[in-house]
Length: 332
Image (tube, rainbow, N blue to C red; front, side):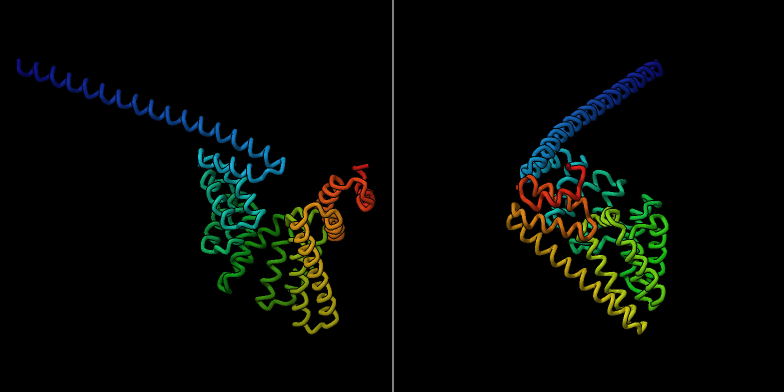
């Protein structure tokens, strides 16, 4: 009799325990569903804020756009887009610390996105924060072993870490160069590395190739993102070749490359001065046209066209605008 009663009590206890567990599971599932629904709603609100911000940015209201993107980022921290948009605005303003913080947030939101990781690396370098560059470069190579820029970034970093890292740096730069033979940066960096190793003839060959790659017309700008960056790299190569020919005792070629270096420096100074003047007065049509002619001279027609378009909106009857428009037949 006692045994039967004991069995009934045990079954009752087991049923009560099971009911409690099932109830807790349903409650947990309900809580998770509610949280998931709330997260989805927040992300939808964030997407709406991002879209409004993009519309404001198109109208030139960048501060309003940044406000909306900041609200979106706070509302849905794991939503990539607002962080990336803010980061690129900060970058354009040369506010590298803030840009790095926003790219960090974007990277946390989507840690497998290699292009974002490379943008983060570039921004940290610009901000002067070198402590994590190598580990992030290695992570980029690990995530995308066939991505040439990932290998190039790691090679560039290692090339400036002293002789103990030069062999690995050369391997990484060669991988990048083989993957994209027309991309100038790996060749420039490899040429500079050979120069530091006192392999002067190898440096000469690579730097001469780099100079040709820096004169591919519009394609060069596509690789280096801006005409200003192209001219800085040309100056770097010309300076290094001046040093190479000085070491080789070839004075005529040394003087020729020194002249090319000075010309690149003069173009950079002109571009810097014109950009400064345009920051003071964005409606200075003659300065816009001066800068557009400089971009044409340095083989950057897309940027030249953008500047002429801007000048045409400000002064459609300006005689220089009409003259420069003739270089772009699609506007006729």
